[in-house]
Length: 282
Image (cartoon, rainbow, N blue to C red):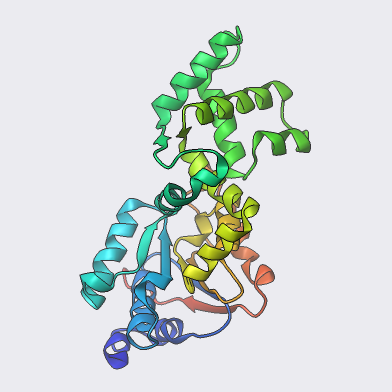
């Protein structure tokens, strides 16, 4: 089976599939066959190294990318051997449905979309007698979203002391109202998962022990809270593989930190870096 998995790959892709040991940073631009290398690596782990599928977690950025990866893996492995493949946010929903009671929510929490968020913010502004011409709900939503992308709770914002105290207080009230309604917004999915892992050591250890292999695609697009989530999911025995393009970032508008990929090998000593430089689209 190893031969079958490797025959369609070039040499750097084969190296990525066969790598063992330290963290792996796969630098790959569009059209370089990175998804093929990633899916073949997962198939190799399951078929050749005997890693149970449930011990592998693969994280992507979009539902479309997750569906494509699942489809490719199903072709390689069959439907009954698929590992965990999901976006960051979908992964956090699955974790929180099982664990969020540790944070004082119930597992049947509601997830607010943008319109739900704006409706609640309008209510808060009205209650505080703040006219929308003075502070637009969407501007407040942007402030809150940016804070969450940086991994900052209202309390953390207050400690830093760099943001407007009035905005921070509205952020605090917004979070309070969400919790009263057993609701989370999109940013909370990541922020609360990070909070959960940071505050409840037993939960963090359980999830670290569950996954022996963590693979993250489009790593250049991770923001601070996503990078922190990766760190918290990575235990002493976790094999980490991240794939990204160090020359592009389509998610900067969501607070992506290109420094995450540029400084990855500083955070993970002994990282092996492999470049996929052959372009299959040109």
